[in-house]
Length: 125
Picture 1 (cartoon, rainbow, N blue to C red):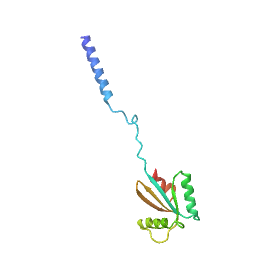
Picture 2: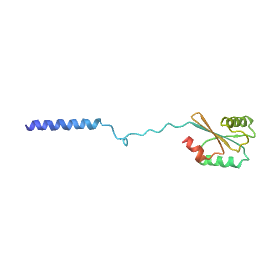
Picture 3: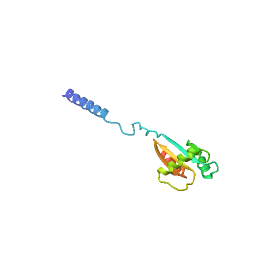
Picture 4: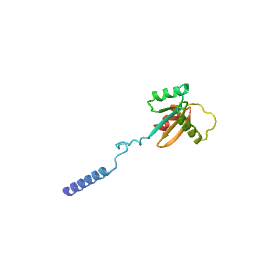
């Protein structure tokens, strides 16, 4: 009888261990995957004499955000490109500089005098 009870106890213990080992680990033990990195490009349309353009460039540099700058006074093709982008968002008439296009995963996001913290960072982070 003692051998029988010992056999039942061992069988129960082995069964319990196999159930525990087949349980899924908690989410704390799992490796959390990083969300896929966004691909982005920032195009800044401005002019050297523009104080707001200079301030935005300084803010982008301080935040270590890369950008490509175009001078709309000397690069007529980029001036036309800027106006086409403004037209695509329904903007007509005069415009304050800088105009910035934040292209994220192929989608254009055009801003007039954007804020790095409010407009640009949320799109690229």
